[in-house]
Image (tube, rainbow, N blue to C red):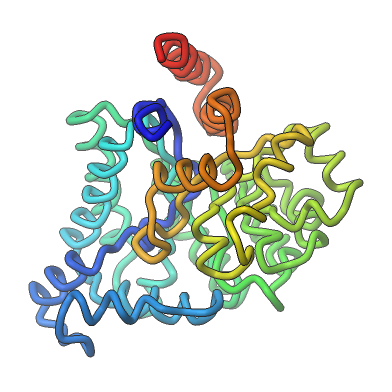
Length: 333
C-alpha cells in the first residue's frame, strides 16, 4: 500500500508555503540574511516544534517566517516544496501564502509574490507540476488590513483565489464578508478555513456569507447533519489535513479521525499536508497515516485522489486528464 500511495497521481489543495519551511532551510536563509536565531542548531529548532494547540503552533510558524526577507528567500522556500511535491507524485498543487505575515514587518508584497511565482513557473518547466496561488487573509488581523491587502494584490494575475486562515476561535468568517464580496467582484474564487477548532456554525458562515468554492478542514461539519447534507448536495470539497489535526490535538488518535466517515457519507473529502514542516509529514505521509489507521482500501485512496483533482481550480478538461491518469495508474497497480 505504501508503494501504491507513493505512485498515486494526486493534487494538493491545502498547503501553506510558509508551513513547508524546514529547519535546515530556515538556518540557511537566516545565515544568508545575517539574522540571529534563538536556537543554535537544526536539532534545537526541531525540538522547538513542540506545541499543544493552534496558537502555540502559530507563534513558532511566524518566528520561522521572520527570516524571509528577499525575493530569493521566497523562491528557495517555494522551490523546495515543489521539488518535494514532484517526488510525491503531486501533479497539481494550489498553494496558500500569507502576505500580511511579511508586509506587516516591512517586506514588500512584490518581493513575496515574485519569488513564489518564479518558483512556480520554473517547477512547471522542470517537472511539469501545474500550480495555482491562493492569497490568505489572517483572520486575527483587521478587516481594513485585509481590504488593503486585497486592493494591492489585484494586479497580480497569478492569484486565483483568496482564503482565510490563522487563529479560528473568536474570529468568525462573517467578519470578512465585505472583503470576500470585493474579491469575488474582482473575479477571484474564495475558500476559507472553518470547522477545525471552530464550530460547524463557522462552516455555515463560509458557505452562506463568504460563498466559498471549498472548505479548508471542515472536520466539525459532522456535528450538524443538515450541514453534511448541504455539503454533499452541493459537492463542496473539504481539504482535510490528518497529521495536522493529530498534532494540534483536533483528534487525539488517528484511528478516531473522521476521514472514513466523511467518505462514507458522500462528502468530497481530500487529503492534504497543511504545514508539513511543522506537522511531521507531507502528503504521502498523510495518505499512509490514514490508510494505516482507518484501514482504507485502494478504492478509498482512488476516490481521495480523484476528489483532489475534482475539487481543484483546474478547468474541466484538465480535471478530466488528471483523473484519467489516476484511473490508468489504479488499473495497472
